[in-house]
Image 1 (tube, rainbow, N blue to C red):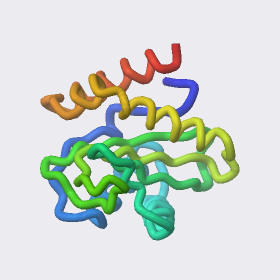
Image 2 (cartoon, one colour; image 1 turned 90 degrees about the vertical axis):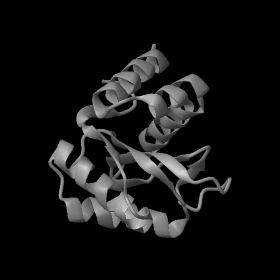
Image 3 (cartoon, rainbow, N blue to C red; image 1 turned 45 degrees about the vertical axis):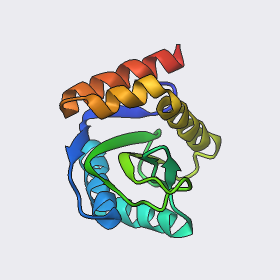
Length: 153
């Protein structure tokens, strides 16, 4: 789909979850389901990265990310939370949008480029507002696909 990462409609959801652990678990399930990965492996990788420091990006966004075997390129899943959650973000704001990124084990700069592309995407206030206002996962996917395509062009 993009030069930086793959995104599929089945990797996008709207959910109300009780805490950060449940968010990581749901994200691992979405990533594993969309790209035929082992959910336990994905969850372990996301939790290990989170132990190094919060992936709360700021402005209501978190970007849990990890590198795992079995991927050809970076992949993304997104959850828009029904209720904001504390994610220990740098700015102290609770998180509403969670972007999960998985990259191949030895992806090096490719992983960093994918993180940078996601960062640019969520810094665009119009895109972030549209994501927050989307009535369902299908519309959320459409907004992301269009924004990502514009970013690559």
